[in-house]
Image: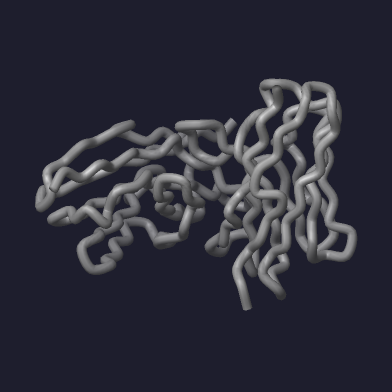
Amino acid sequence: GQQVMQIPQYQHVQEGEDFTTYCNSSTTLSNIQWYKQRPGGHPVFLIQLVKSGEVKKQKRLTFQFGEAKKNSSLHITATQTTDVGTYFCAGLREYGNKLVFGAGTILRVKS
Amino acid sequence: GAGVSQSPRYKVAKRGQDVALRCDPISGHVSLFWYQQALGQGPEFLTYFQNEAQLDKSGLPSDRFFAERPEGSVSTLKIQRTQQEDSAVYLCASSFASYNEQFFGPGTRLTVL
């Protein structure tokens, strides 16, 4: 079945440093979504990427979708303590209707 | 105009008991999803509804799990004869369409003793 792998599992950075998490799918995706889950909270939608090679920015966050539509990345520039949480990618297979989530990357920020 | 709500927020069950978890999606959202999230893991798909039709139940781990959405709005996830391995957070999410962003509820934390 479809699998979505996410690395790293955990990253601890100093405030102001950059952070990147990577996502790889075993199958070609129609779209990929990113969610953030704060400790004790529920996943909150960040963005959806649909086109091959697409790049989207939200303030300090940059999202990329690979040319083959099988991988994606999220990059945060100059992390802040408010960025802490777990970042999940979730892939939707073509003609599918269910998101397959990665295991997430836990981000901790030291101030 | 509130978001997705779920009840109860916490449920403790003795092994063998039946439980029912409720989800109230955002009004007007056609698609409704149930996920199971174990500690330190991403949400795992359980089942998907489009209106009242259950179009995909491939993620339900056993025939002890049953979900319904009879009127196309509120949904209930029922677990019969609970086992310890059923302990997890059960998340409900809704969206306008299956390929759109999903709005998650706060989840129900189920602990089976």
